[in-house]
Length: 157
Length: 381
Image (cartoon, rainbow over the protein chains, first blue to last red):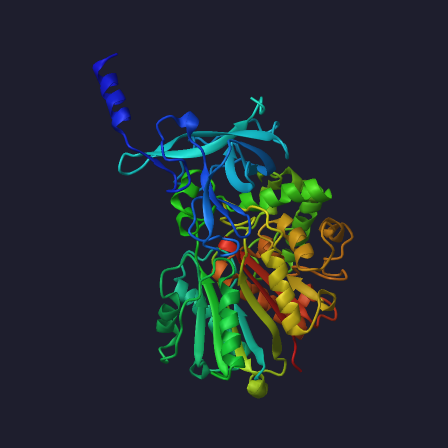
């Protein structure tokens, strides 16, 4: 490994990782294959919410449990973003058309998520699998960990 | 309780006004409303200004142009629903007896293309590319097609109607008729929505003068009663506009709860509506609002457009102004643009767009983070 590559590697290792929003991902962000979305379940109305909450967004209850969502979900609805969204964004430049979906994830939350697949393949009801990754590097050189979904080829695995 | 009526309305042309300062744009609409009401600005006892992308204290800055009479004029912000929140404040001030004459106006200046994302979205949402407003309408459209069999052609026909009506509206931004084939050949932006099914954010201002019905005869022989003016922010879940988590609860949508309360307040029902202006940010949303406002049963919005029910000559004309698809959307002024149209329709002043026999009119708006408003107007004479 060349010296500059070593430096880059050291910088990568030293780089602090942060979730896209505090309370929305499991805490250990080193092994991205193990990172999951987190949230709250209300013990009064039973609703599952993305992100750790103090009060239930549905019924205002303070009686909530922290939950970790599973990695599978099903498409409730979808669209294809043909044009680049407003800047700034961390997507490719030039923009590549991409699917965006309401995904019903395990434990009953419906969340908005980018989906990486061909537009022809997208369908309501299709099963998806969570991928967590470095979305961008922020102003303080921290790696921001984000989420997207991909088709789950073998959802039973 | 005093009744609140509208004695004057005014609007600028909606579109591009790059060389006009926003205070002057607002003043143009206010002057036009004052002229309509045969009223001097010094008679205004209170004002409310709605805007989204303009700077803090836009309303107070407009006083610099209109003349500092010393009245209160705060900004009332509520995304695309800001104007209905302002109109509601004006209505309540008159109904409570606090004031007899209140000016309610909105103004916006905004560039071309998608709107700047940081005003209405969190950083992570726009960094992940999830701040493209039409994405939500597209997601709702796709689900509606799946559940009810609504077709892309039906959505296209709403756009054809909007464009056709817009030709008749001198204040509209987009004034060119288009065929269904032209609409369906325009580029997909967010499937299933295409370019000519979407509205454009534009510059513009509009105003309404709300008055105690007891003294309205001094200003207008055709004062229009505000039978209801309701504003709400959505319960959970919000499957639209800036939302990122929308787990199912069985709660009614904000469109349904807002319109129900408006009907109840007015003592009227959807069957009494003669003409409506709804938030057609895109052609699909108009179909959704036919259903959500109770103008037809759930799932039958597509049938209404197929059967011509919502055309100017139909049984229940919707968006005779051309709607946002033709007028464009100056966010803070948008609902006042709708009010201008409904007041004109009820007075019989809508010229080529006139809906025969229009007596009761409804205007509905919806905005980011769940703002929804419904105003119902009827003649007071």
